[in-house]
Image 1 (tube, rainbow, N blue to C red):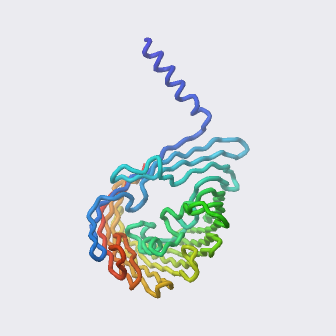
Image 2: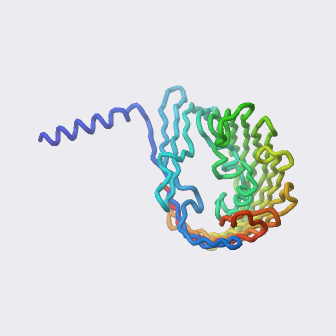
Image 3: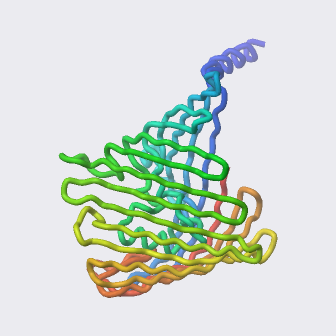
Length: 337
């Protein structure tokens, strides 16, 4: 009897603070894959994390304030399934805000529109999407990688009859070290879906006392039933705040359903890099299979051909070596919860 009373008392103490919160959700992604590849003389054979999506653990909540208003928050940490590192030191998002019929206004570390307002037949996969691989190589901020999360920011997100709007202003963006002068950033994204059609556009400006980095992207996809065709183009000026370090990237891809649960993804992308007057060509083929609503198995291959002066690709190049091809084959599984 005494043990029951103690248990009830402890439960009451633990649960009491939760009553102030109308809704708290724990969510996450566990994604791991085996990779085999090469880049010049470098070889890769490993188990890595985050093939289709970055692995993460997050908490989001909302409290009803009345009159259609809610206080909201998100706290999301990244981690690596392959070695367990990351939790406690790799923040993906952390913000608090106010939500209502007007949308959501929030403060903290948040996604810039370049994170997901890009049309991609590979879902912005960092190891399979030619668009993502080339964007990471050029240093573009319109990418689903780490530079797509901006610190010290105020953001607006709204959804109106199929149109999603995201606007963000950062007073210290893209994980840059503090410095004197102007280091603010501005981003705007529009994403419209209507039945089989999707159109998305992004503009991002990263300011600097030396040179502003300016980027924009536009893409569209259409589901014809037998396949979905997707294309995207992005342009970047003064990458890394270096004048003349410009590039443009385009990708075209298709998603072909081959069963009720399986899809074949095929895509080709190209980056033109002005600084070295060279091109990188990247092409991929992948298969994804939904084992359930929350679990997806996948396998894919990417090859990235680099012109002289370039060393893009999933597998890192030998130090100082450029102009070599990069190949990677990956097979893995993603579980969302």
